[in-house]
Amino acid sequence: MKAWLLCSCLLAQVPEMTAEGFLVARPGHAFRFPADHGSHPGFRSEWWYYTGLLEDPGGRVYGFQLTFFRQASPPAAWKGNRHWQSDQLYLAHAALTDVAGRRFAYDERLNRGGLLAGAAEGDLGLFNGAWSAREDGGQQHLRFSVEGRSLALDLRPLSPPVVFGEGGVSRKGDDPTAASHYVTFPRMEAHGELGEGSRTTPLKGQVWMDHEWSSNQLSAGQVGWDWAGLRLRDGRSLMAYRIRRADGSADPWSTLTEVDAQGQVARSTRAWTMTARGQWRSPRSGTTYPASMAIRAWGETWVLEPLLADQELRTRRSNGISYWEGACRVRDGAGAEVGEGYLELTGYAGSLKGRF
Image 1 (cartoon, one colour):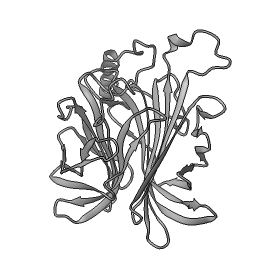
Image 2: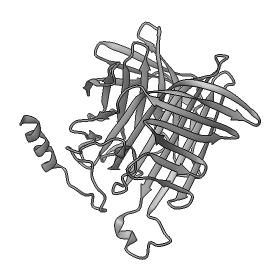
Image 3: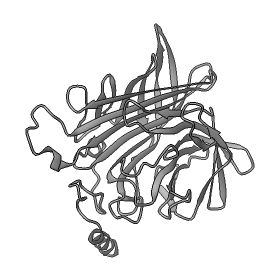
Image 4: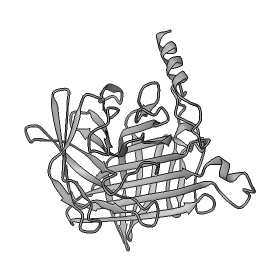
């Protein structure tokens, strides 16, 4: 009864639609899988986001990122003939970090929905050009390329999907529309291969998969976010979402969540800190980013150290955003290596307000 009353109170505070006519993430959504791995076109924005660390038989380590974006135009702008047009734009970013080779490469795609790009409803089925992500029998399959190197990965979830937030909603700010439905597989066992020319190299490792859909990611005064998905060697996983305000401070809605070894949310807090350690300046964009990050909560410290300093994407051909997204090792407060993961730094090259 208490849960029902709480949900009813939360619903009363959240509008059903934005002023542009998009759906708003509201408490009480009944998640259904695998259906909710598919597209939700009534929302303005949606992304499916994969990051992972992979190793070849010789111990050479690679980090990768693959993100599929869906961005919708306001419904009011599409009242006319839709037969040969689509109100959905599809973007995709891919990056590969070759740690031993000290090489970072990335690529991007932009297509309007139709023959060249799309996202299925009711199941995971994404494509943008030759890049794709699909689900079959509970496993997910990725196919993409980065500057002449191709990756084919098969992913097996090690636990059920995790839903972040309260009442199925991940709030991002005081504005009740600044919220998303946020589903994650923190640990997916990966097997596949890296292709370059006629040569293929087997790879294996672990992957983090995020899926968010929303119609507004930021409130007034917010400019970007620092996100991290970490896998600790003791079996825990951490999702850190620090939302930055224009003055550089953390918004009170910033959240750190711990997922236990069984894939269940163990605890979540807004009483935590994520602070920069040093600076790194991009030689291409001139943007200054944190050189590393330290997370502190629950009496513990985790320090995120990039495996390569330069892991910046400048997406000129898709959404025009520059951001840092890179593979990291994780150390505890005493300096011992305790895990791995990915760190995303956005809004340092300009505010993202209104972009998602």
